[in-house]
Length: 461
Image 1: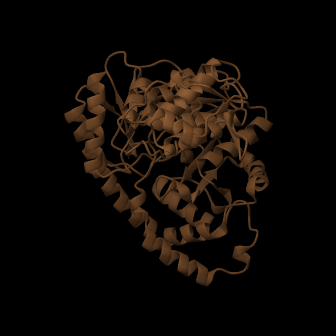
Image 2: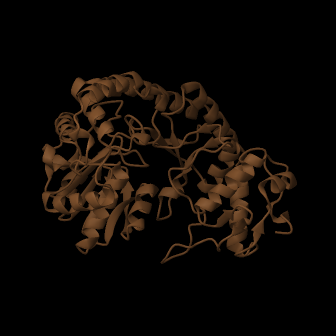
């Protein structure tokens, strides 16, 4: 590449995103053709007047997206034009986005939704349970086990889910998975093999879940969401045979599926995939019970410890209608032969001793304080914003008056060192602008500072 004039001057903040976006746009526009060699990271950093770390991180992002490749001695080259998804135009605002986003040195305050307070992880309780498990584990416990998961964890989960979520299932009905993402992957593979290649999804709804479905060849058909949750009449008007939704606390709007909509959905004859998204975090009242108990023969129920303990634990559960169970177990076995045994046994111990429940009570109190601090800061610094949804979960959605491009706003907020997600990332149909803001991972004083910066950006806009 002979010159980099098209990049312009670097901003004061958000330089990694600025550089990655500029190079990505140049590839898409053909200014950087396939095979073009990029400057060495140290050289480009000097020409742009930025740190070498900014260039290294930007190159890595584009390498992860498949736009760049690098080999020792051969430099870094453009591999192809920016890809377009099949069947439609590229989603320009996401630029090859993959959720959840990776940490960035340009982001001082990461308010990504769905991230729990990882500083609250119960290290002492986990260590106690781990010592006990290691002292008691048999040789058989450490061998190849049941792909559904260890019997001890499945038994504890059956009891705990019945008590806390009203789920109707025995230990033999539960499949331990690597989080809800794997549950969706197994369900996609199994339903596609039976001829179901399209699911209804909430709109707006989780972009990450939609990407998961598309990866496995399942078309994500949008079904509108309003203040009462999924609009079931819009679903029944289709010929869909499966739907994915988050009824206890809808992502990203934060609404709860209303009793009337629940009844209407249960009358619908298709497969209901229930993602019990952060249902354990309700701050104003007890959470609504899971749908699964009302129709276990038609509902596939998914959950995980990602929002209660940590995403890095990669532990979750899938309880599906029995006519799907054997095929799902076969798919799980083919995928990974089963989850690691020791974390399963440790979680079983935490459930059995009540340490998991005690941890949840502590975390709820902390996260309620975080949410209250965020809402108070929004009232002070962004008074025009409307906070949507119930007092629950790990995020809030704010909607904004006017005709703002929320993707542009989120980019400007990132340039101020704060990461939030634009509502547009989670929409398929057009709608009012909004920002999805996580609060669990930041203490109240940092949330106050983050919202102050958000307010400054919005006032300038």
